[in-house]
Image (cartoon, rainbow, N blue to C red; front, top):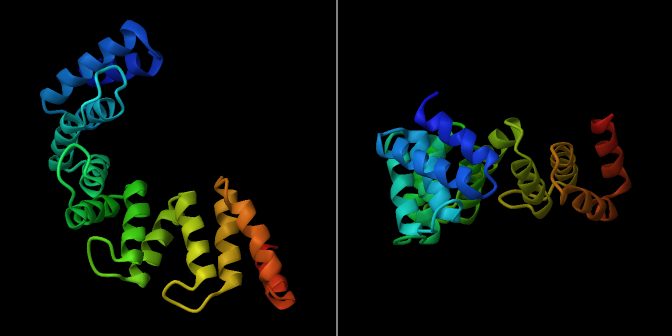
Length: 206
């Protein structure tokens, strides 16, 4: 078993104590040896302070190492640090560029954030269609946040006329995917829907 795999196994069983600390030390060794996933994982340990002293600047550096190696999760985490100014400067334009590459690699966290940035015009031009498209891709990958966000977008008419039936469809999808807020939104939406809209929604669900 390699350094990275050993570190993962120790961290997984180590809620505290020597297993966790040893796993963190091995993860750093693997990261420093050039293992992209280890760099991302060690960055997360530094970010959260799990098994090591919290150090946001160091976390950012290790995330950057993983991103430089082309790891989508590393790109998302590095972009997150840039978006929020954690461990260094704040640059939403750079964050959005990193999220785009990570999203194209199927990273659902990046897809969720990129969709929101497109919708709000953060870090680049506002593009409602692109935001909806990214959230649609995320929902197709099983991400309940993206399905929920599409429900909000359709109910609120963000970039298009409000469509309560389409919103209901996405909230229902979010509910099936386990989103805890979807049930409440379905209840609120049902109150404002017309009888015809309710019938159309139920026909879709059947």
